[in-house]
Image 1 (cartoon, rainbow, N blue to C red):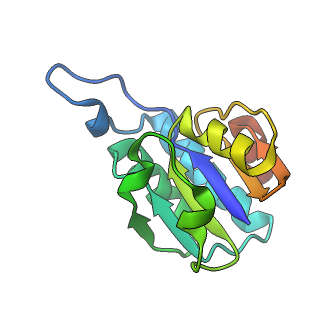
Image 2: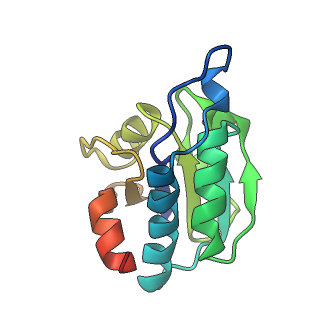
Image 3: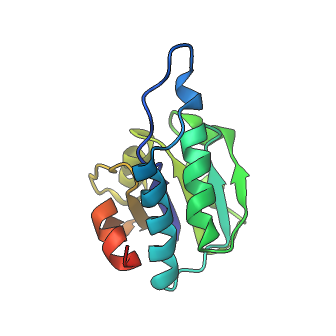
Length: 147
């Protein structure tokens, strides 16, 4: 199963700050923690987490993975643009979490499953090739997490 977690809410760029350097807001931090706790409460055992090198995605991955007991690996392919989720997940276990950006993640859901979805900031999708198992918005993840 491939899990796709869109980064949480991020600050607007400061003058002179690049888009890649934007950190999470407090709301984004809560979204990231809730995603990790929700996955843990659902009994999902993540084998590997790959995250975009952009600050907001790295922070989302780190905070989500605290509840999952998983180390985060940085994957430059996830920083923006089309990627192949199956190729990234290959050989990394049966439950792989990818953390990144839009519109790339909605496109990945469509390419994996055929489903048309729009990933919200802090949203999560669980996919297998040909099947969308679950699409959860941040509010649903908060409810599962009990936050």
